[in-house]
Image 1: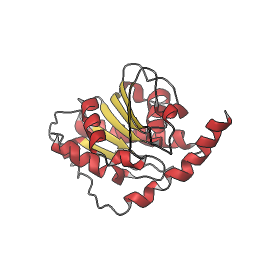
Image 2: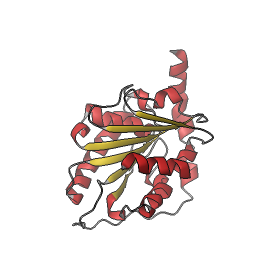
Image 3: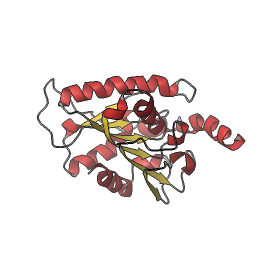
Length: 209
């Protein structure tokens, strides 16, 4: 128990480093018109971790476009609470709920797919299990997700894929694993590297199809 408590406490300190790795990247989010064209896929909503931002998913978004997704199907939210404390999931979960409602309204779809990194996995699971997300999410893909901070079991009715690395030194593997999910362990990729890895991108596409 002490070990788990210590890991939770240091999680916020380490994940704040994520900001330094992303501020240097230039990225233009898709400009969504009031009425979007009909799209083939469910919209994909990207949810960042502590210290992160919507910019974190630039590499993944570009890859999905190469694989046939439209820019009009890709959305990335910026969350306000970037500190690991007892209010993080509640605050960010509420923002995710409002954001996804707007995405569904804009696209005319009934469900979204979520790709979440790090604490974004925890925030997404809170939205799904504690708020309104259970009937609005079709697939959830977490990358080094701190999933165990909310639940140890994949939500019923949602296809969950948890991708994590044996060399992740920030979020321990046991926090990423979920019973009932497709748990995929890879090697040699850092926590931040999960956002910029070609193998991870391929796994994301497989999970979303």
